[in-house]
Length: 161
Image 1 (cartoon, rainbow, N blue to C red):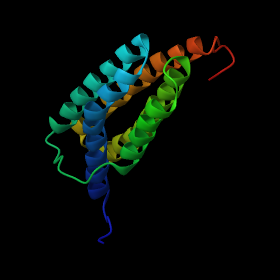
Image 2: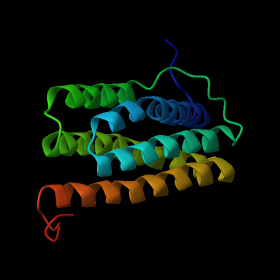
Image 3: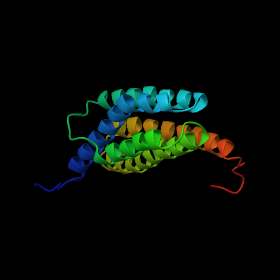
Image 4: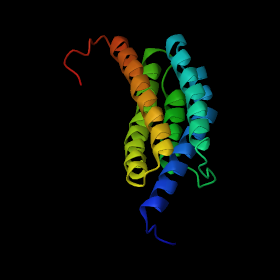
């Protein structure tokens, strides 16, 4: 196995990974929506659509998107699918699915920060802007999911970060 030896190569790999994760979400989230309650299902369907648009945004930068599967996203989505099958339909399943989707967002937010830092270091403003736009959308979307989680569990969120 060859080793990555430059910031440009690492950025390329990071962006391919982000793109693969987005494409995987666009494909797999609709099945999770089908297992969720009505309100959560709408949010998850919107997540799937957003993921497809975000993958396109990355591809529109001219990025070579042909890369390996995103292993961490596959694992998160596999866990989410297991949650959809192993928890009784209703509030508990929805709470579990919210957690699963938020795990994906947390991973993407952190990975996006890495890609943004590398793109800025390398002077690739277009790629940095595309990843930053995706990251901002993920943060906003995570906030909506967190609010649903807190309302589902009867918490106001006043003491939570």
